[in-house]
Structure formats: C-alpha cells, structure tokens
Length: 241
Image (cartoon, rainbow, N blue to C red):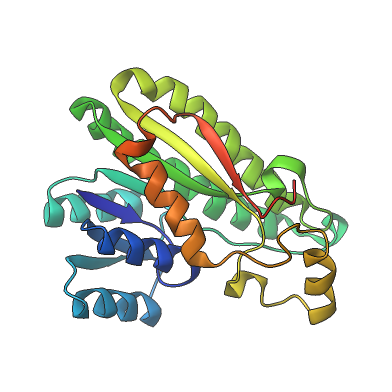
C-alpha cells in the first residue's frame, strides 16, 4: 500500500514516514519548496531499504497539489492512505495579528488539507477503499490563548474530519484525525524552559509526546485494526484534556 504524507521532512511527518516504511508501505513524502530536509528524509528511508520518494510542492496551491498527487500516483500507482500533516503555528495576541498572518495559517492548515483530500477522495471513493488521516491539535478542541487563529484552523480540521468521514464512509473511505498535545518538535522550540515547565505541570504524564508516539497512533488508525473507526478526532495529549 502507498501512503502520501505532507509536511514529512521532519518532526511528526518524518516519524510517520519512518513508521509506515517500517511497516512495509510504499512512502511518498512531501514538503514545500527547496527543502534539503525532505531529500535527507528520502535518502534515509531508501538507505534502510524502503521504497520511498520525495515530492516538493506547496499543497496550499490547488494546481501544485494536483501536480504532486498525479506524480505520486504515476510513481506508485495509487494513494491508499493520505496523511495531512503539513501545518504551521503562530503565537501572539490576536490584536497584533495581521491579515496576511491569518491568511497564511488558513492556507497551510486548512487549504492544503482541503486540496489534497479533494484530489485523493475522488479516486479513493471510486476504488471503494482508502484512509484519510489529518494531524490536528488539542487547541482545535478547546482553544489556546495567544493562538486564536491557529486554534481556529485546527478546529476547522476537526470539523472537516467528522463531516468528511460521514460523507465518505458509505464509499468505503475512512477519515479520522489525531488531536496532538505538546509534541517534542521544532514547532515548540520557541517556548522557554519556564513556559515548557509550566505547561508540563498540567500534563498528567509530565512530559511531551515523542513524534514516534504520534506515528504509532497514525499507523493504528490507518490499519485494518481500526477498520470500524471513522469520523473521529482522537486526542493524544498525555491526559491533559
């Protein structure tokens, strides 16, 4: 089976690529623009003997997304599992946010997911088989102060997941999301040690998640073991919520 993962050059995306490759899947990975880390990830996967290929392109642009999706299907024959992982964050008071800031957040966190899902869902439905998995955030469930727009985009991801899962379920396509808590990635590197400690004080497991732990949940949700799990947002946050 072939899995296509957006935002797969590092962090959660790379961990997901490594896990699915280890499980024997053909792996197509994507990142935006000239991204050396994307090619490093491809080289590492191939060095381990996995069938992997990298595809550059900004998935928030529909024509680019269509070109990349076509290239993936030409290379591997089909996309059986789509994982929408690409995302960006921004912290700060909403009053200080510029329209260009929230447009970019919406383009990447919502638009890219819409584009890839629209392109993949059509042939998944025709084949009566497929899995779409969206990587979301707990802030899409409860909201976070000073991350209002980011929280809004992830709330949209969650709502879209539930709705599309209901729509595509009769066609044999499952759609789910993972609402991640604090994960040990570069996205959270801007936090000071005091800010990190204060946050983790509220997490019952008293630590961040490892990217590999998110990848483990993704592998389960994409597997036959989760064949009756659909239109769900699975929270993975160490018990915070």
